[in-house]
Amino acid sequence: MHEIVASPISARAFAPFGDVLIDDTGALAPWNGRPEAHGVLEKLVACQPAHAGGHVMQLLERHRHSTQAFFPLDANAYLVATAPTAPDGKPHLDGLVAFVVPPGSVIQYRPDVWHAPLTTLGADGRFAMHIFKDGSEADCEFFQIPPIAVRLEAAQRAHGPHPTSGPAQTFPINPIKE
Image (cartoon, rainbow, N blue to C red; front, side, top):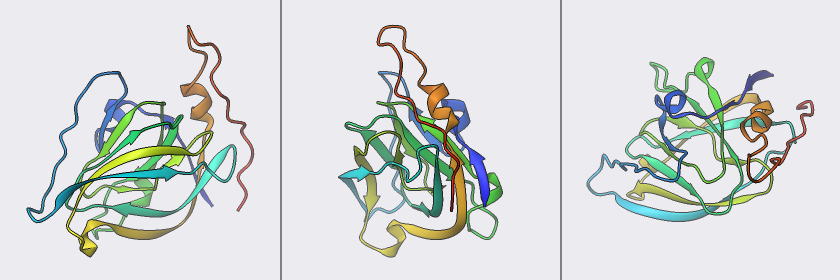
């Protein structure tokens, strides 16, 4: 099984795929490429990975005509994984990267960016999600991929002890099994 290691997210590293608001302030600019599509704000629950030290992905999705933003409501850290689009329109899996996003941070994918469904680290978490939809199949495209393991060592590094609140939650590193 192919394996990648998740890195702590930064605005610079995530820029090819979208925007991230890590600090307490900032703004995002949603984009809609279809005049008949309407902005939708949904509430969803993202689940934690099946393995304490990693996560296995088998599905990517993209939204060709809309940005997609996630606003954590009560989630701890979470995992996002993205891949560039290959010339044939499919995900370019050799370019797949994964990021650990700190609690309270907002992400927004650019249109036409392949990404895995959200996965929380720790407990399941609730998110508000904004996207533009018109009810057609163009709202969301799914693509099955061979299993790819994402190792989560970065979760511990990204959430080390905070100077005022003490140690962060740890995520034990266990081997990933198929």
